[in-house]
Length: 88
Ligand SMILES: [Zn+2]
Image (cartoon, rainbow, N blue to C red; front, side, top):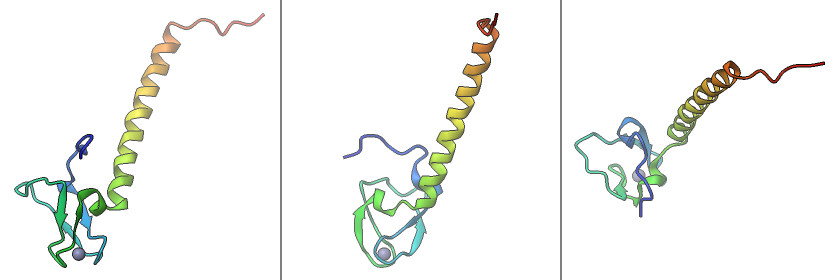
């Protein structure tokens, strides 16, 4: 079962069959199912198994950028009201 849907949905990525390693793409017209069937060899397995490393890395990069931005903003906000760097 899905805990959550990947965001964005994997239309945008190449999917790779774990069996024959053939890459293909979904279109927005294709229903998102829990299992996919490889159009090349007919291998059927959960959609997660078709997601490529590239797509995962891309998602991680995006997530990291979001975090860095949030962190940077929080830091700036923190600096404004912060006066505790006093010495002596
Ligand atoms: Zn295949």
